[in-house]
Structures are given as C-alpha cells and as structure tokens.
Amino acid sequence: VQLQASGGGLVQAGDSLRLSCAASGGPLSTYLVGWFRQAPGKEREFVAAIPKSGGSTYYRDPVKGRFTISRDNAKNTVYLQMNSLKPEDTAVYYCGAVGRLGARPYDEASVYDYWGQGTLVTVSS
Image 1 (cartoon, rainbow, N blue to C red):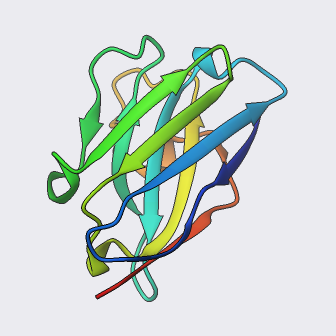
Image 2 (cartoon, rainbow, N blue to C red; image 1 turned 30 degrees about the vertical axis):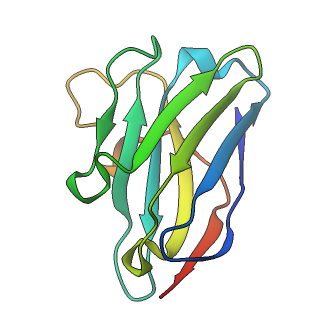
C-alpha cells in the first residue's frame, strides 16, 4: 500500500489544520494507522494511532484533547484533526500503516510497514 500525507501548512497558534493520509494499492481498513512527527533536530515521535476497527484511539499526552484521529474507509483515508495548535507542534508529520501489530507497541515507528512522505506543519506564535 502507498500512503500520501497532505494538509500541512503555516498557521498561527490557536488555529486548526486537518491532515489526511490517503492510501492507494490496498484497503487502508486492514491496517492500524499512526501519525508521527519529527521536528528539526529531534527524533520521530508518536502522535496518534487508530486501529483497523476504528474503535479505541491512542494519543501522545501533549496532544490529548486537541488532536483527533479518525478514518473513513470508504475514502481509504485517515485524518488527523489538529485544533488549538501550538508552536511546539511544528514538525513534519508522517502517517504510517502496520498490518499485523501483535504485541508490539503502536507508538514505536519501527513497527510500521509503510510510510507516507510527510507534510510540514508550521505553527507561528
């Protein structure tokens, strides 16, 4: 499956953005999908994840209550709605997909099988 991340941009603190992770070449519904981000000079870090069923969702503590991950299987797309953005949210955002997670942690980038190319989010103060 190929992933295409989009929706990034330059916004001011307090604004909102919605990122999209569109899949081609296979049904995204068969994958757990995660969003990660990487700020300059820092390692890639987990942001949010949504399982195949779209039931329970998982978030990094600093984004809880501000970000919402969702999926639209009919559109083969996973979204990350980001509200109340802060300058510290500035990063390149990547979406990843993993088919069989098993007992592995969803918040580790190494477990993901596929990655999109990233979309830049810049939040000015």
